[in-house]
Length: 312
Image (tube, rainbow, N blue to C red; front, top):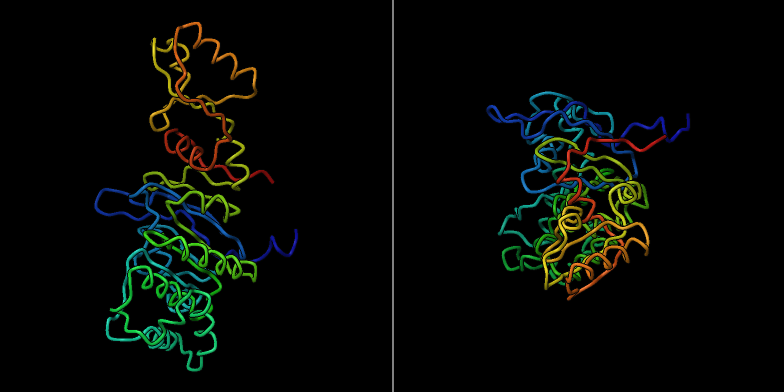
């Protein structure tokens, strides 16, 4: 076994359950995130993503199971586990009476860092906050406040970075600069756990993906393998005229206002078009494209898929 395989996981969840009343918001979730990995945790609203992050941060206690950060059990070693984490929450939480620089110095103090100005200056530079360093927090726009939230999470150089919808409602410039900075940190060895509804971000950034549905882990594999299993070439079209033949309609699915078929090759595309012509259907719009993570996500969320680790 290699040295890499023997390393303590950055995050380990074992049989984690979070129960509110009779409902399991998180239901028997087990997964490991390796040190240095860029991992995406995806799911619809209410799937349990933020609840899992709250347990990872020590803000909520699991009803059952184990939550560990770099080998430290969060419930038994909360202060040590928290020092190893940098968390960007969904909500904008800030003190309106401090400047940006004061906010970051105060956050540094929470972790016992007294001389941290060099790193604070680097964060301000990389996150486009240098010009706002001496501005009061309440004077910032929502996008700028989001940048400060990211800087606060990174101010103590945590080995594990958790980003809960970090680019929700922010401009394209921030998204690009943020991902460049986070990608650089990941290349330096920082582990990144991302939740996002921008699936193109997860597809381009993350090497492995887990998907939650109603609190249960329904997919767990590398991004490449998930796309290979659930995504393929798609034929999308919009038609008018006569109704589609029943067999052809039954083999399709709806994406927006168009019908879609999974096709293997050009001959299958021609077969479908031939059946449409024979039935008197007029093709008003046609597209053949390679499916992406969004297509895979929709298939998994709409199926009874079970979690599967990649083959060894």
